[in-house]
Image (tube, rainbow, N blue to C red; front, side):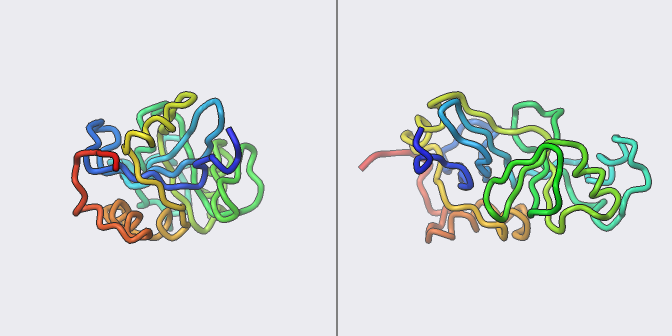
Length: 187
């Protein structure tokens, strides 16, 4: 796949007709997309678990309380026991990849250790699980109008309230997603 064809650093907005309950009304940040497939993190599905509870489960009992009430997100239906941290660039962590110049994805525990100590990234989202696509699968879904793709922005990922991310992401390209038909079509 050519680099310019990559959907990395794009937000995938589930179209109103999305039948899969794992993705209905979701916004997913594509963190990696290549010839082998794609990986994304859903950024608008808070779980009934907060960061303080997760850090406690990881035996980080005396964690910095400033972010303890931040919800942990349901990042997708694959690997729900794996943790992923989306964050602004900050220091050097063991297993990080740059999604863009403003967004990194870290899969190693050291970022959680830094967050617990109060020395982690300023902006972050913690998710359990991810969305994954096999080779060619995401491209086919795009052709079938399953997703609307818009450029990612740190503001949508880190600052917009979770409940508003689906509509705000679509508004970045002038679309009122609530007015779209749930039936896909081709012109």
